[in-house]
Image 1: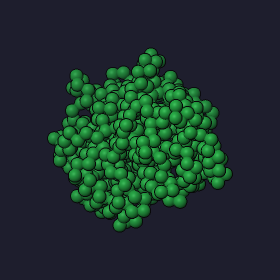
Image 2 (image 1 turned 90 degrees about the vertical axis):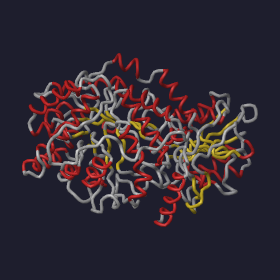
Image 3 (image 1 turned 90 degrees about the horizontal axis):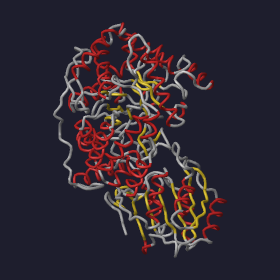
Amino acid sequence: MHTTSRRALLTATLAAAAAGACSGPTNSSPAPAAPARRTSTASSDGPSAAPSRPTTEPGRDHERDRRRIDELIGRMTLDQKIGQLFVMRVYGHSATRPDPADVAANRKEIGVDNAAELIAKYHVGGVMYIGWAHNIRDPHQVAALSNGIQKAALATSVPVPVLLSTDQEYGTVARVGAPATLFPGAMALGAGGSAADARTAARTAGAELAALGIRQDYAPIADVNVDPANPVIGVRSFGADPKAVARMVAAQVEGYQSAGVAATAKHFPGHGDTSVDSHVGLPRITHSRKEWERLDAPPFRAAIEAGIDSIMTAHLLFPALDPADDPATLSRPILTGVLREELGYDGVVVTDSLGMQGVREKYGDDRVPVLALKAGVDQLLNPPSLSLAFEGVRKAVRAGEISEDRIDRSLRRVLELKARRGLFDDPYTSDRAVNRTVGTREHRATADRIAERTTTLITNRGGLLPLSPRRHRDLLVVGVDAAAPSGTGGPPTSVLARALSGLGFRTEALTTGTAGSPGPSPERIEAAVAAARERDAVIVTTYDIASGSAQRTLVARLVATGVPVVHLALRNPYDIARLNGRDTAPGASLAAYCWTDVELRAAARVIAGRTAPRGKLPVAVRHADDPSRVLYPIGHGLTY
């Protein structure tokens, strides 16, 4: 997007927010200008004072926790202290007996065979579960892995439980899939507009994560998605209105942490207005300081006021907050100056993955963790080379660049988080906890009820929807099939077709290819058109339609058949902006915000009229060729 267009878009978004535009009820007041809690403004190498912070678990014996933590810190060697600040990946489904291929991967990348050896060698304070590291097969396996890791940690000379974590945002990012319950993602919840639903989803999800032994979740997203072309946030955000996002973030913090799981607001100071993915490059945020205060800061202020346990940094440049050419993860003015001293946050600060390109462009992998600690970070997440990162920190301490008191201060924050989440009392889980909590019928029903309130009806020409099995008995479900998130029922077209079949329709699913490919081939488009002519109506799915996309051609050809066409955007709700012409406009258009089963089942019920559409756009849909023109504003949503 051109700079002038981005500035016009930002101005329009701020104006809408100032006017009180909201994706849901507007009876909540904005986050306060400054939280009541303040942290010490001592330098990063100052005295190792214990942070003063209220617990989110009333009834804890804080004096006992303090004595326990003091005793542990007093017994630790420097290496053990440093290790507690690292959160690392490790390959394998078992803490001691991973598959041979995972042993080989561990040896190559970390120099150990398994998770138990990782803990013994590097004393890591956290382990992050990842699908591609083969940590997640089924709930009972994950629970056994968690127990194996804790057993290894508690067998060391200074026994400290491990903080197990994962990226479980729901929606497009869900590391733990079915049979665990999958909830709607952030933008879907933003469309629902209910803080109560957001809180319930997080509380229920947190209970399932805790039953698996996972006690830190890298959620919720606190970024305000200003740029429709944002390549990394998008539907992971609750929306474009900072007040509405702040309300949902606070609700999710309360939900997760009431279930015993540390929530993590990300990505500070805000990743919602960027055209660069920090996984592959270094974004630059051009907001002024005033714009940051109005747009990016409110969700983080709300998270802090809600007592959030951890905040994740962003690998991006933010010149208005720090003119130095360093990403926020390595910026003392941003992390210590703004986050700790101005916003009053005194909890754990965790980096985004240190393997991402956005934080590796300027410094070596041995220097990045050192600079992050000097900036104010407490947890160092997933360095590409743990040996280089660990040795870099150790050398910095021995050379006096970082004092041991500074290490102790971060160590204390990490240990206090572990105590607050009950890990010192009972770090283990059980098969019984899994059976009575993970993926229960009650939890799945809760997810379905919440999803029913999120599907957004954007257009409905001539009252095409709802479809009726009497008038539209035979349906074709056609379109792009995105790779299904972990453990879902299969390709979206097939899941949607099965759901509609269960509602009394005769359906056929016809895929036109996978998301991210050049688009439907001419041959696939012809096959879709031929199949559509024999049907009473067509449901066509799209996934992030770009300029000149063959997906647009597919929709236009289907519309030209004269058969009623219902469009369902599987991801970003902006797709309708590319289908706004006379030759491409479908009879009706809906947004599901994701393609997991729970969202697709909800969309099917809306299409069939079993439930009325209640979702409201949490972002504005702007004209594809002129972002200063709004086609559908925040809060738009039809019903019947």
